[in-house]
Length: 413
Image (cartoon, rainbow, N blue to C red; front, top):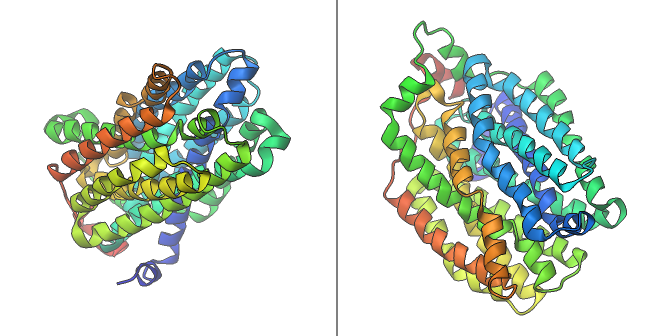
C-alpha cells in the first residue's frame, strides 16, 4: 500500500494530532538549529572562540533529559495535550530571550533552560501521535514525525539564507519565538490521546520507578542505542555549517543552500525508512540505513567542490535521518503502557546527554588536527554508523504491539 493511500485512511482528528506533533518537533528543531549557523558570529561578538560557544550546544543537549522526565511525568499524569502546549510556550519564550543575551554566560544559561524545554517536546508529541493512529501505519507516521527534525533544520537554513544579512544573529532568535502560535492550533483543534484517557479509568496505576525496575534491561539498551543515534545525527550536523564556513571558506549563502539540500535529503530519508519499517521491521530498517550511510562519508566530508559536498550531504542525511525515522515508533512500541509519555523521551534524551559533548569534541579534534573539521566529521560518523547498526540489529523489537487497554482498539483502528 502506498503512503498516500495509507494517509487517506486517517480520520480528520488523527490528521490534526499528527500535524500538531509534527509542527511541535519541527519548530523545536528550528529553534535549536538557529544556533549552529551563528556560532562564528556569536564568538566574534563576545570576543571568544567557536569552541567556547559550542558549550551552549553541549548544555542544551545535556539538559534535555531533565525536560523529558519533567514533561513526561506531567504528560502521564495530566495528559499529552496540555503538557505539549506548556512545553511549546516555554521553548518559544526562551528562544526570544536568547536574542537579548548581553553576554556569552547569559546566552549559555538561556540555552540550558531551552534544553529543558526541548527535551520535553519529542516524547510528549510522539506519544500523543502514536497513541492516536492505527498500528499498521505507525512506521509511516513515525517517519513523518521524525522528518520534523530536518524540516526544522531546513527552515532554519532558509531563515539564515534569506534573512541573516538583514536581521543578524539576534534577529534569528527573535524569529524563533514564532512557534508559540502553534499553541492556539493545539488548543482549538487537537484532542487528548484515547489511550491516555482510557488509562485514567484504571484504579491501580504503577509509578514510573516501579515500571522502570521491571524493565531495566530494556531501558539500559534503549539509552545506549539512543546515545549512538544522537552521535549519529549531531555528529553529522552540528558543526557541518562551521566546517563549510571555516575550512571550506564558503559564504553564508552557499552554506545556507547546502543546508537546504541536505535537509531535503533528511526529510525524504525519514519518510522512506519509516514507511519501510512497516514492511520489514524496525530493526532491519535501521540497520540498512545506518550501513548505507558509511559510503557517503567521503563526498560529504572530502568533496572538492560545493556541488560534491551538497550531493554527499544530501545522501548521508538521507540515511542518517532514514534510520532516525524509525525511532519514534520503535521507542513507543517498546515502551510500557503506563509510562509512554515518559519512557521514550527519557531514554532518548539520556542518550542525548551522553552524546552532548559531540560538538565540543569534534571542534577540539579539528583544532588538534590543524583545523581539519573534515577529519573530525568523518571519524565520528564512520564509528557511530557501525555502532547504531550493531545495537539496533541485536536489540529489542515490538512491531505492531497494541497500546493501552482493549477498549482503545476501536478508537485508533
